[in-house]
Length: 257
Image 1 (cartoon, one colour):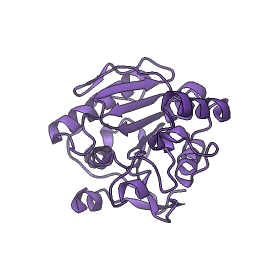
Image 2 (tube, rainbow, N blue to C red):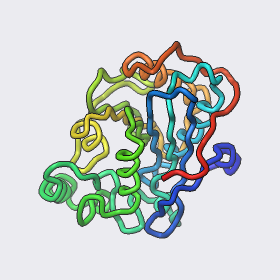
Image 3 (spheres, helix red, strand yellow):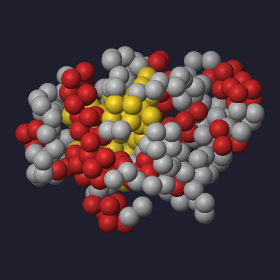
């Protein structure tokens, strides 16, 4: 991950920490008259490095939008939810306690379904262990708290490397973002899409990039961003026509909850 890209994102520390005590960083970009809240999350899985890079690039694009064409969207970006996985000696899917954070959310019947799925469907794959109980991990607790406090109207979760677009929840899903076409792959016990989209009624767009280590070309990331804005505008009532021309950057609070 390029140092310059991280610095340009102007991330702010939250009060949350990972298992190993690493700060969870975020960035808000908010117009004065924001009526819609969108939460963008990258690197839930620490070995999906491209997901964090795309989130950082999207921060740049969101900041470049002229103030009068931001559609009233309050963006909150969390580029790296799993820093311990990202910064381990060899990047790993799970967090520092070996938990797959994307199986750790409190979906109904989690105690039964998550265990059965892990044992029967994954063969007890250690990369997909859901943890001892829902929200057992500080990183999943942080994201859960963001959902409760920030109350997003849309969650965008960036992953890799399946090269498709997934969707859970109400509304008509986007048919494509850039080169990624809709291919709804189902829900999993404890997943963010299952918890947020199915059980909380918050649309969850899951972006599965084609490669976990290679960041898409700038033009491709821009096209995905344009398509996301267009769909958000059309389906969630975000405001005026989409534009991503350069302009002044958005403000952000000194510290996020």
